[in-house]
Image 1: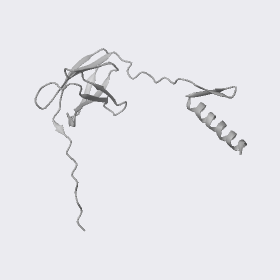
Image 2 (image 1 turned 30 degrees about the horizontal axis):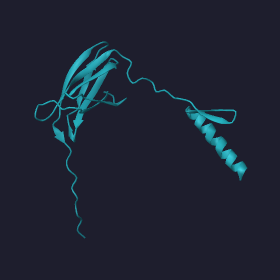
Image 3 (image 1 turned 120 degrees about the vertical axis):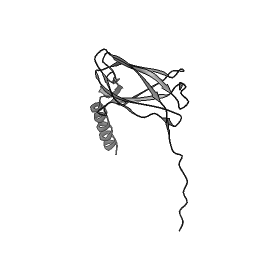
Image 4 (image 1 turned 60 degrees about the vertical axis):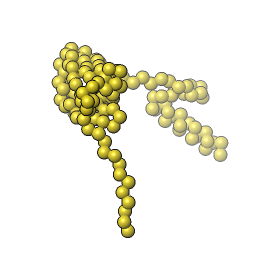
Length: 139
């Protein structure tokens, strides 16, 4: 039985080492930090404001953005005045959408950014999630 447990432990160590998050030395397992690549590495900026159906800024709204071909989705939050800024973007086309408390904006699609360019966008919340209805089935 101890031999089986020893083999299981060794396989677990090998798997952890292969994943890059642990290293084994002299029978001990040490955690090795794994660093993610930076999300942004360009010099362009998208900024703007999120406004609600009442045309007033929406504090702390969530802004979802991604490249227009659907890769690398990210999210940022607006400040207390509804303003947001996404810096260090690569020259690319981007899609953006805002949401807050169940209300969404339309997707603003194909916002083209050139290297070093800054663009200002207004996202207006206009759609809400339909409430879920509890339907009873008749037999």
